[in-house]
Figure 1 (cartoon, rainbow, N blue to C red):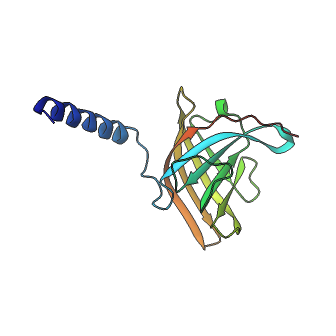
Figure 2: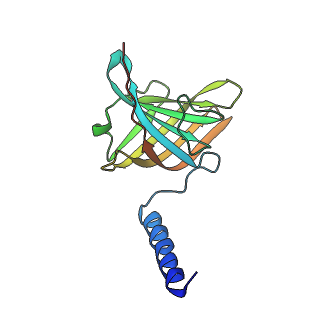
Length: 152
């Protein structure tokens, strides 16, 4: 690699790191470093968004392996700059954890959506707990996965 190529490579890496640091997002949860988001059918067939925190970069419907899914009962355009309570008796949404063995545990907590980018990437943070047996906290940058749904 030439000196010029090394300098360009270093500049690119530095720019990418600076962009990641400037986002203001917390680090992703160690156990779920990747995320994606998609449209979903909400209660009474209204609009909803699912955000999946996953272990693999490839989006799969449903996700494989252990994962967390957060369902917000609002459309994508309504998410930016809001904090949502999930679980329990919340009207905002629900969350669940799948540990890979098929056991689903209801979670409760909060989801802060900081922004929805022009490409529909959803950025924010989660703080979820489940009866003291499981918790997940951290930032996410959920790439939008387009899919067609027929609700209800």
